Length: 109
Image (cartoon, rainbow, N blue to C red):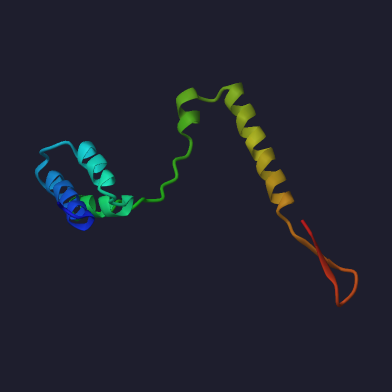
């Protein structure tokens, strides 16, 4: 009988091979590896050997809805409400420090 370590290793190798060749059902192999007690990290590592690790890029998209809808009253109202909301958020995040005595300062949020 194959022990857990050997069975897990075989499943993970099958995942890596499936990624290399494009042959087989990766989902089925992942389920089989899970049943063999492989962790999500181990399964991910097996795929990462072929595909590499995804690196997210920070990219801000601005004005997409305004461009699509044009300058309508509805969009202007939304922009106005967002600007007011941002002002309220800025005000509420100001931290005020006060001290009733030198030994016991108090903080108000």
